[in-house]
Amino acid sequence: MRLLAVSKTCPGSAVRAAHAAGQAAFGENYVQEGLAKIDELSDLRPALAWHLIGPVQSNKTRAVAEAFDWVHGVDRLKIAQRLSEQRPAGLPALNICLQVNVSGEASKSGVGWGELPALAHAVAALPGLRLRGLMSIPEPAADLAAQRAPHRALREAFERLQAEGLALDTLSMGMSADLEAAVLEGATLVRIGTAIFGARG
Ligand SMILES: *Cc1c(COP(=O)(O)O)cnc(C)c1O
Image 1 (cartoon, rainbow, N blue to C red):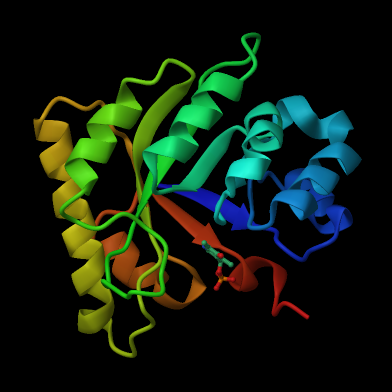
Image 2 (tube, rainbow, N blue to C red; image 1 turned 45 degrees about the horizontal axis):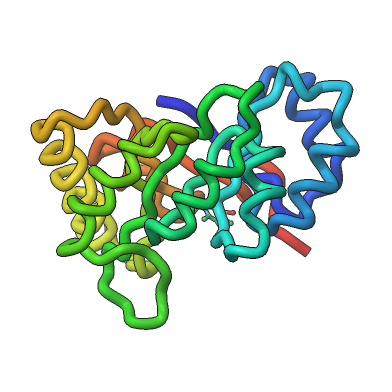
């Protein structure tokens, strides 16, 4: 189980303190804020892994491909193709998790269940990327059983893709409010903000 510390809206000093306490992987939602923090903490760059967990617009793909180590919000082939083309040759492949719209909300980003297999196989073939797994942001639910259901569905889709030959190792699910449900359903990476850094102002 890996812990991604979600540092969105936190100052660089909070990331520095978390790193001093042993944390290496940090998640940012907003491209501009993430880029500014990566720049501010450039002295720590080799020791940190920066994950973009928010949506990626096509006009931001170059900056993202140049600065981040992971992108979790990919849900369209066009964005993946741009990230692959724009990943600098001197860097390792950019790690990708495909965002799945697990709750089927029309307003939410994420690929639908039906389109997921084709997208996963297409992204896995792009040379500048390394497809690592799936991520989700389910609708909030009050009780544990209701929280577990979308996480179980994501894990089952993940296992089907593995059975189809994709070398996936990352199931990015679970935030502060549904951490336990995600762990029970086999999350390999949990994205935790407020439970580490406190409420966002
Ligand atoms: C903000 C955010 C998190 C962390 O949420 P907390 O409730 O603060 O733990 C995780 N994942 C995504 C995609 C987020 O936007």
